[in-house]
Image (tube, rainbow, N blue to C red; front, side, top):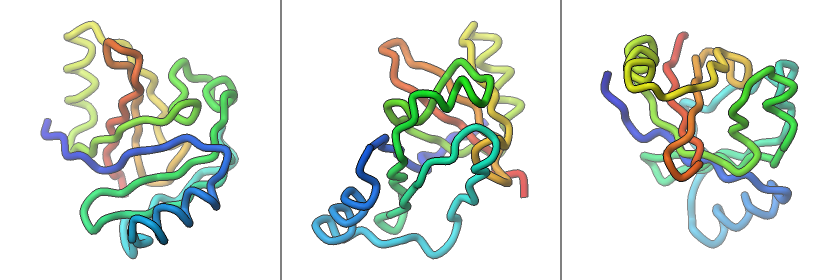
Length: 135
């Protein structure tokens, strides 16, 4: 059950301005591989821009306070943003969280095609995503 930092998601009402800032001011680039394919008809239909430093992606997602309700999930990853880790064994992560008594929302592939995603809160209320590529 190894976790590797994959991306940081910043929720914003200004996706285009944020993308321009991160590209023009910080010099980040658009990733050429491993770009998520959004499932816009399953609960979250917002615009998202993707930039990276060559190792870690930053996802600049349109803020959506209702995405969790539309997807039938308690944890909403695009209300305030989140930090995301990739795993090669999502079932083991879920079993570990269950054993530790940490509740999570299992979004499956509702937001990203080919990714099984779960979201949960740390003790301070920050949203954490763990996902496994399924394709």
